[in-house]
Image (cartoon, rainbow, N blue to C red; front, side, top):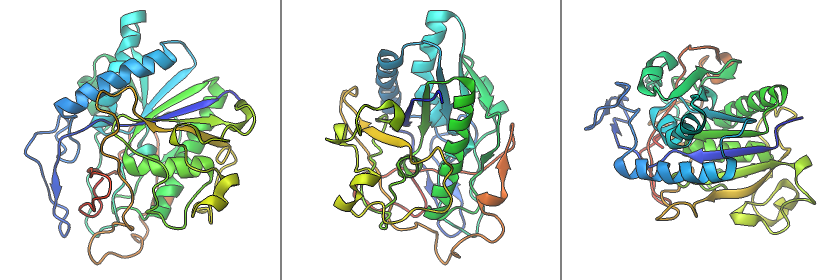
Length: 328
């Protein structure tokens, strides 16, 4: 067992778009670098946030070996990691490798229309010449093109993280840094700790833009590691009688999951303006008149390897506000 720490960050502020909830047609006033309307770049404010995040990650991690960086395939997530990853080039002259993993990509609510998919790695490579972008070298689940239920999102994140942990252990990686989206951050936190609330809308894992969540493997934490829930960490499985959490688990969990303790919950002390734009579930967020799950097209039936396309989703909302369905 080599992996000790998982750091999850959310992308910075980004440009917006709108989706017709009946047809799935997407419109955006700002062109996307990838040509996909729902795959925007960061706003100028988001770029500034990413720079501050990069300074903090370098302070914590430096450019030492034993670190693996993974990202959702959406442009804004890779762009958020750019300032930190560029520092490796400045210090060592070598490009920092970033593994593109659609298993930690965005979440869409279930719909009868087809959701857009993120760009292939081969499209992303020339857009980030200072990074060494590589497709994930192992099987990872792909989000359904017709969207996912929250339960299916849990399953996807559990499988993606299980595979990432397994391969990090095999490769001698000690710290895994992942940049992803709000819904995936919540799902990842719940499956890593095996604390899954009955009410998905409950606020447990925060999702502030460019916030840092840190999970430590239980074997590497002295004592139980959660006596005072440092930095706003939500209750653990052992403390679940204090909250509506942990009354159930979604489906199968791989053995690596549930071995993790959240010791930092979307902390933002490194950001000039502190925590902003948290997000939480608001029901299943399926589109109007949708079935419970798209027939024959759930992620359980799809695997990603190399540069095959998957599907994901996208928009933001401020904490406490109900979004357009399916958009994070």
